[in-house]
Image (tube, rainbow, N blue to C red; front, side):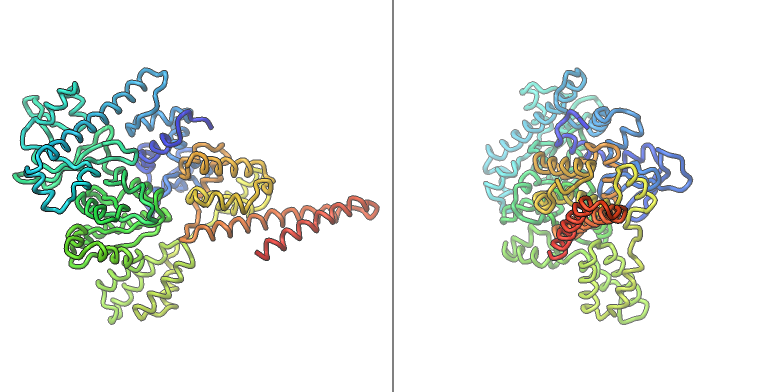
Length: 593
C-alpha cells in the first residue's frame, strides 16, 4: 500500500495521534483493565466486541475482524484513501509533511520549520547570555550546582534576563514577527495587546526532540516571584506528552537500559556523572507515547522518581503501561528520598551506579510496598498482601517469569507457594487464543488449512515487529522458500524487508502497509501476542512449531493421496513414498534440535 511519505514521518504521525483519543471522537469506549471496549462502528452488534489496545496503539473487532492502526481506523471510519488519512492525522498532530505540489501543504510545512528556527535562535540567545557573563547570577547558580562548562555546552543551557522584552527585541532583529514568536510560546500578550517575554530571570533548558530539533524550553527561576519551574506551552511543535528531556543525547547511548528521572537538573547531573542513558519526563506522569519511544530504544527502563505516596499510584500506572509494551521495568530507590542530583553530590558516581544495579523489578517493588502496607502476621493483612502480590504477578505475560516471582516472593515473605500460585491463576486474564470462530473465517479468507500454521506464523511476525534485531535470526531459522502459502510468504518478506532496510519495527506502522486480509490476521496476532523477557527463545519456539505444522500438513496430504491410489499405480506410489520419507526426515531433524 503506497503512502507516498517516508516511514519515519508516518511513524511520527501514528505516535502523535493516540489511538484512544482518536477513536473516542467517533466511538464511545469504556476502559476494562488495560484496554478499551465499545460497540463496533463497522458492523451492527448489541454486545461490545470492538477493542482498542493503547499499549500497542491498535484497534481490533473480535466480531467483524476489522483492525489496524490509527490511520487504518480513520481510513475506514471516514471512508477515505490511506494517503488522505495520513494527511488528516498529520494535520491533527501538527506534523510537518514533506513538501509537495499542494500549496497549503507547502505553507504548513514551511511554518513548522519557521517555528523550529525561532526556537533555535532563542536557544542561541539564552546561551549567549551565560557565555558573555561568566560572573553573572546565572553562572553563579550553575557553578553552585557544580555543572561543568562542557555540560552547559552539551545541553545548551542558557539564561533569560529580568528584562521584559530582551528576547523579543533580539528575535525582531532577526526579522521574526511577533505573531510567530507568540505561536512558538516564547512571548505572552497582555490585556493591552502588547507582548513580553514568557521566560524572565530563569536558567533555560532547551527541550530538543529525538530528531535534534529545539521544540520548547523549560525555565528554572533564580530569584523573585513566580513558579519555580516553567515550561513552554503546547505549540504546533511541542507537546509534553510526546517529549522526553535529554532524548537527543540518550538515544546515542549504547546502554541496554534507560534511566528515567523527573527533572532537568537530575537528568543533567546523571549525564555529567557518566550515565548518558538518562532522560527526564518533563514533570508529568509517563504517557503511552513516551513509553513507546523508550521501548524502541532499549529493552529495559529504570524509574528513579521520588516515589512519595501522593504521586506513587500515577507512577505505578505508568510503569504498568511500559511493562505492557513488553519492556522490562525496574524501580530505583534513593535512600532518604534524595534527588539523584543531591545523592550523586554527596555519595559519588559509583554509589549511584550501585543503586542502578540494585534496582528492584516492578513486581518485587510492588510486593515491598504491599508488605509495608499490610501486617502479614495478621489474617486479614496476610490475605490482602497475598491478593495484591498475586495481581501484580498475574500481569506478567511470561510463564517462566511468573513462576520465578511466585518462588521468590513465597520464600521472601514466608507465603505458601501453592496459595500464591492459585491466586495468580485466578487473576490471570483469559482469552489468550484467537477465538475458533474467528480463526475459521481467517483461514478460509487466506487459504490456510492449519490452525497451528496460522497461529505460530503470525506470532512469529509479531515478535519480529516487537524486536527488529531478531529479524536476521528469524530469516536464518526459516528459509522463505519453506513458506508455501503465497499470502504468508509475501507478508514475511515484506515485514523482513521493512524491518531490515527501513528500520521500521512498530507493528502499528507495518499494519498500514499490509493488504486488508493480511492486516486483519496480523492485527489479531498482535492483539493476542505473548510477551517475554527472552523473546529470542519465544521466536525460536514459534518458528519450530510453524515448521512442524507445515510438515505435518504435508504428511497428512501425502498419506491421503497414497491411500487413494490403487495397487497398479506403482510409479506414483513410489514417488509419493519418497516425498513422505523426505518430510518425515525433516520432521525428525526439527525434533532433534
